[in-house]
Image 1: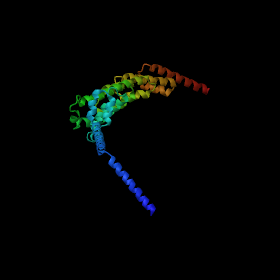
Image 2: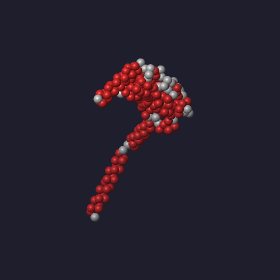
Image 3: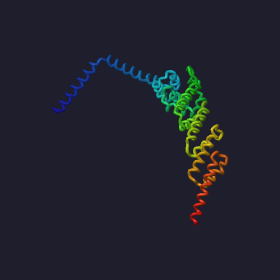
Image 4: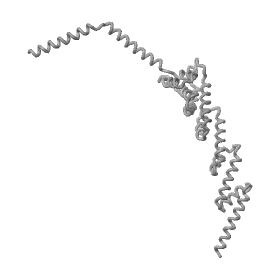
Amino acid sequence: LLLRQAAVETLHQRHHRVGRWLKDIDIQQIEEHMRRIAISIAFILLSQLAIAQSPKAVLKGLTENDIVKNTERFERISDKSREKMPEMCYLAEAALLNMPKQMGTNKLHGYEILSEHIDDIRNSANVEKTFQGLDIGLEQVISNIEEESFNYLMSLDTERNYVIYITWAKRGGHPRLGDIEQRLEELRYTHTMAATSTEDCDFFLATYPESKYRDKVAEHRTTLYYNEAMEHNDEALLESFIANYPSFKHTPEAKQQLKTLRYNRIFSEEATNL
């Protein structure tokens, strides 16, 4: 009984202390604290709304030439914009990747994106809304992407990159497609003329049947064929060469070589029979 009474008294004392603590709190301080919390929450919500971007913001930022800021804008394009105007988001990404100070590989990737979606972009109902109030138009953005990626491609000047880019250029209707194909042909011609196998010549002649370099490549192929026949000292190979190229400038030498081989063979056979 004494223990129960002591426990009840202790509980009453605690309740009394809590009640006195609550009375000591300034209600105005609580209200001020809650107001500050509400303001902070509202500020965060407004900040999130302000952070949300659109393709238009990225395209507008092209004139600033600030890759970092424009990248941030692109990354903050809202899910709503990506859902309702995906083709404009692709355009914004391609334009971002082809800003003047971008890495070259980014420029090539940007043009790949553009070429894949260019029809949807040009036919989009969102074009007018996206470019309204901007100092730049759709075709100018496309032209900038084409030119930036083209310039980097030409600086690389490699067959592999030309082949890949031409695939995109055909799909995207690149205005410099003819220049790219011509440079690829020139590059392949140079490589072919430095080659030591007829297979490279055959590839060039099959790929460019109307090339202005056709006669030179054909002559180079004949020379390679002649060298091969002479080096192997093979009668069948020399006979084939002479039959296929009777008017070649070195055909007389091939005929003389064939006569020598035949004479040596006949003389050797006669000596053996004796």
